[in-house]
Image (cartoon, rainbow, N blue to C red; front, side):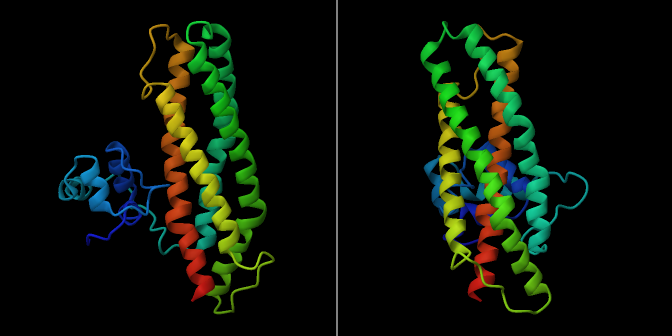
Length: 236
C-alpha cells in the first residue's frame, strides 16, 4: 500500500474488502480511481484502521476466486450468471412493488414517490439495454481476447477500432447507474422507513438497498478488474 493506492485496488483484494468499503460509504466502483488514503480522510476515517478491519475480518468458508488472475471468459460468465441474472429477476419485481407503493401511498409523499418512479424507471431501462450490449457485443470480444492470450495467439481485431471504445461507453453508463442509486438513497433518506410504511414499503426499501449493494459489486468487477485487464491485453 502506498499513498497512491486507489479504492479500486483495495476493493480488488477480496469481497471482504468490498463489504468493508461499502460499510464505510467509500465509493470503490464508479469512484474507484480515488486514492484510498484521501478517500478515507475525506470521510473522517483513518486509512490504517480501515485496512486493519479488512485484514482482521473473519473468513467466510471457501476461498474467494481471484478475479485478477482468473481467465477473462470465466469472469464474464460469472458476471452474467450472478449479477446480470440478479438484475433480470429483481428489476421487474422492484418495479411492480414501487408502482404499488406509489399507487397506494402517492398522496402521502407525492414529490418523493413520483421522483422514485422516474429515477428507477430510467435506471431499469438503461440497465436492460446495458446488459444486452455487454452480452451481445462486448463480452464475447473480451472472451476472445482471453482465449487468444491463453493459446499464445495475437489478439483478434475488433470492428470498433479498440476494445477501449465500447468499454468507455459502458463506464459512462455505470456512472449514470451510480447517480441513480445515489438519488434513490437520498429520496428514501438512506432507506429509513417512512411513518406510513406497510409490508410492501418495507419490502421495497430492502429490495432497493440490496439492489444498490449488488450493483456496486457488479460495477466494481467490470470497471476495476475486467475492463482494465482487457485493455491491458490489447495494448501489451
